[in-house]
Image 1 (cartoon, helix red, strand yellow):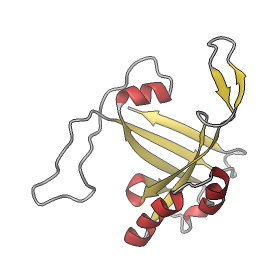
Image 2 (cartoon, one colour):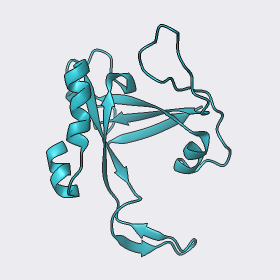
Image 3 (cartoon, helix red, strand yellow):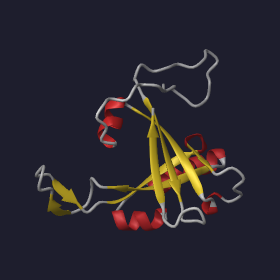
Image 4 (cartoon, one colour):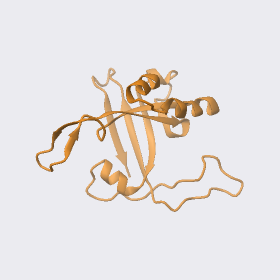
Length: 151
C-alpha cells in the first residue's frame, strides 16, 4: 500500500516513516484516511463560495502507542475494527470536526513515550483527546464505518 501511495503521490515518505515502528518496536500500522483538502478543484460550494476539491488518500504511520485492534484479533489486517487515539489542540478539533463549541483540553503531551528518570516533562500545549473508530464490513455492518469521539 505504501509503495502504491508513493507512486501515486510522487515522493511520499510514508514507507520510511512506517519502517521505524516496525523495526524498532515490532508493531506499528499505516492509517489510511481520506483528505478532502487536497486534489484538483471539482466545483464550488454555492453557499460559501469555497472551492470543493477532489480529495485523496492520506497515509499516516502509527506506533503501537497510537492504536488498538479488536481484542482477540490475531491478525490486525483481518480484525473487524480498530481505534486510533489522537491528542490535538482544541481549536484544531473544533475546526476539523465542525463543532460549535471549543472542546475542553483533557490531554497532555510528554516529550517522549518513555518516562525519564526525572519523571514526565509535560508540555504546556492544551490538547483534546480524540478517538477515531474504524470498522470494516462484517456480519454486524454491511459497510465501512468511521466514528469520532472527543471529550
